[in-house]
Image 1 (cartoon, chains in turn yellow, cyan):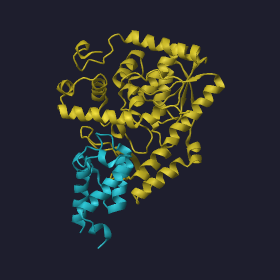
Image 2: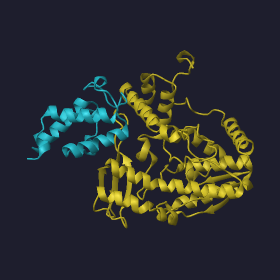
Image 3: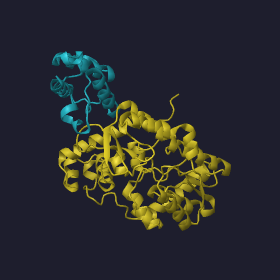
Image 4: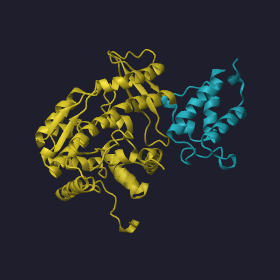
Length: 326
Length: 91
């Protein structure tokens, strides 16, 4: 689209006006993709009590009927307790059957926890894995023009916090170990999909897909991704329209991967979804930084740096979206 | 006095530049000492992480969260100043 043809940048620019129509279109496409293109007769959805998987379950129930959808909860020892309760509430809302597959033993078998804790201990020697909570997070300001680097943060039972920049070796080991979680979940989802001749519905949204906030062959391993083109605020619009329980809509999106509580904003995105959606749109559609800055209450320089950060994220995570090369 | 503490700024610069050229598979004629290394795609976030690892191994320089900013890392010259300052404090 030529610059003179596009709408002036505004905070409403990605708001979906006809939500019913968008919803129907996604449902129709999902139905065609699964039944015609993939030749499968239903849907498996991994449900975590988060907004994305909840919307995917609701869309699947609409597309295939509740009886042809199975929601699977895949907790492990670090999962938060309310995830399961919310996932059950969600499934009940749409009349979808559920299964619980605790993957803790599988992860233990892979050495997921041991390998992760061993790397944390090398950086923070007094880390006590029995009582301390740990997470990795990005502490830099996204508006500063430098690539994001992760820190490890350990929270002691008395509330004391120790945080250190993660060296390359330990960062890679922690990520590689925790990725067993998403990959084990994917294996289990495919077990059920194959035994039932169903398709696995992937739950990543547009940001997760494009910024590479997913694990290759983990949560990125799925047959179809019905919300992969939607901004997070649009996913919330869909959630409201589809009647997703309010507790799920109100919950702060978390990674539910590390022992310490961690929002997706702290972990990866470095800014609130409401702003990120709009600035990403501005970047993707080549709106001048000055125009976006005026609407978002930021300087042109800040927007330029955020644009650069998006560009870096998309480029450095290209590997995750690539198919095997042959 | 340890060996790394005896290095002068030119030696520090030569080692850092050599590392960045090798890590980014670049040619010396293509990389200016004031070029913005992240903006020009010479290093990405993993590249920065490996650079920090290199600074620790080559100069025993540790980088903290608050030192991770463009002023210290956006160009070869900035990195050299950052490392040289750290080394002079150590000496």
